[in-house]
Image (cartoon, rainbow, N blue to C red; front, side):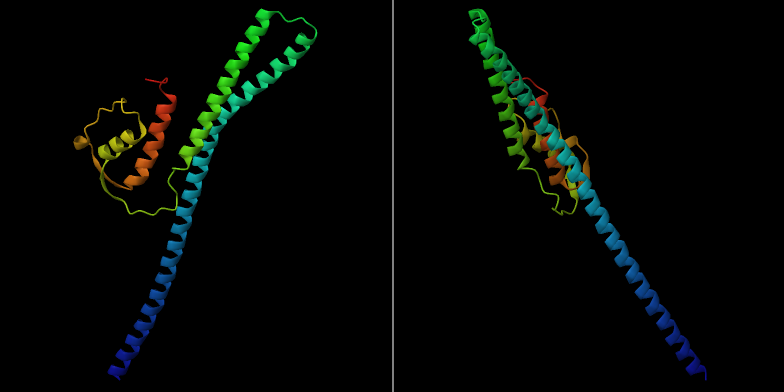
Length: 193
């Protein structure tokens, strides 16, 4: 009787353990699904922020070009009747042509800038990359991104050996820093500085 009772208890505990194990596995799978959903949501949010920033960066030069083109159109609309009615003095025509030339140059410069921005966006990293974080020297990551982004005469005073180490995706950080430094190089300093 005692052996049968022990066996029955043992079988009962085994069934309970098996049931608990199945529940834990189901809970673990639910947690993994939730984690995947959170990662996807974070990627989509990052993509949305990146696209909003890209749209802003492109809209600025395109908006400037559009404004200059509208001004050119208004100038042409005013110029034609004045020419037809012989109301235009030579000095006014010269001044108008100089403005047309400046506006044309502005349009060309800003559209060239927009084209360069679009080309630089092709180099952006994809969000689908999955890299395990590794121990990286933050100074080396910052310095490497600076060298890739900035003109050779741009100086960065940083001693990578004194910088802290962190467990991170160094490539992702380097990509973000590269974009930041390129933005600084394009917008923070007048040409040649």
